[in-house]
Amino acid sequence: MRMYDIILKKRRGGTLSAAEIDFFIQGYTRGDVPDYQAAALTMAIFFQGLEPEETADLTLAMARSGDRADLSSLPGVKVDKHSTGGVGDKTTLVLGPLVAAAGVPVAKMSGRGLGHTGGTIDKLEAIPGFRVSMDNRSFLEQVRRINLAVVAQTGHLAPADKKLYALRDVTATVDSIPLIAASVMSKKIAAGADAIVLDVKVGSGAFMKKLEDAFNLARTMVDIGNQVGRKTVALVTNMDQPLGYAVGNALEVREAIATLKGQGPEDLRELCLQLGSEMLVLAGMAEDPPAARTRLEQIIDSGAALNKFKEFVAAQGGNPEVADREELLPAAAVLYPVQAKLDGYIAEIQAEQIGLAAMALGAGRATKEDVIDLAVGIVLKKKIGDKISAGETLADLHAQKDMDLTAVEQMIQQAFTINGAPPAQGNILLGKVSGSSVFQFE
Image (cartoon, rainbow, N blue to C red; front, side):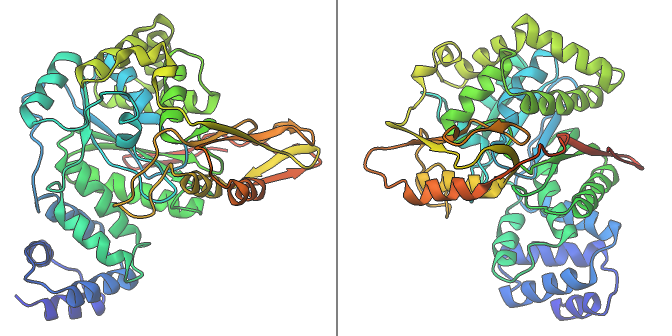
């Protein structure tokens, strides 16, 4: 078998066999296949696409390229959740404790933030003492004991994906739906879950800007999951403005805690209830999403979700008192309000611009080597549809001393569009893909 023949076959629109795909992935991971041949094949895939069977075979080959978590010793159906990335997305901090309190084991490996989207692991590290690394035995034991553990993803999980993504990033082949789907699902499959709930975001703060593309990606990932024996559901959700109000690591932890107390932003609460309901159904803990939602609402109202969060934080070495004493979390030295210049209604908020502004404050990374400031960030004071008067605060900047905030203030001003009439209100949930069904909500 030769890479030349595999590249030529795909360039001509042929269907690659599982053996050919495995030959490429294993060879590229070992270093036997050079970058120029891998780049040629990914470009051929970019233009010719992949059949569903090819995409599933690619996903499995990437999942097999490194370590695979074995969760079989844990009781129950293990359900994982993955978000395609957005601004202010702190759902795992709410969903993990909420679903675990309902009796569903959550054994999750999460990543760090890069670019304008945040990472769950960075947010958890804002909690004093919290450990994001542990050995496999301790990881499984914690899930067995409290139904929840969240750790940093290791470099040995689907290493082919890491290497291939770095290549795609510099060869203009990132935005290929089969390659994106295989990248996401290879890590989820290697992480060992029995079932997967996907949060596919679309809008100004998401990787997918068009609704059609988001549904295509959701459909492809659900097909992969089902083909490889993982029950998979995808929700397509709105990222045309930041999720919640807080953008920045410690600030998002505060907002997640408020949500677990039943006091969080409506859009964050709604999304967590929707995703959590799907997780409970896949785990066999509820008959349908409405029944699951009722149960999750009761868990929040009773305080059980907050108690599970405290238990989770303590189990991983953190200080559980952060749930009641937010002053224990890192705090920025400067609070700088950005004020509106016009009267009217908030018609649009460019979520990516807000994320980039938070990066400029130090809350995010431009490269994986960058050190972030866990305290800084942005707290919006207005969301789409809200009325505002000139001089009212659009957002508060949480910054450190001696920072020149002129450019960041300008970014915030440019992110907000104020019109004279109130806009139509959009829903957080735009659609659902499950099995052979695709639902697009009005």
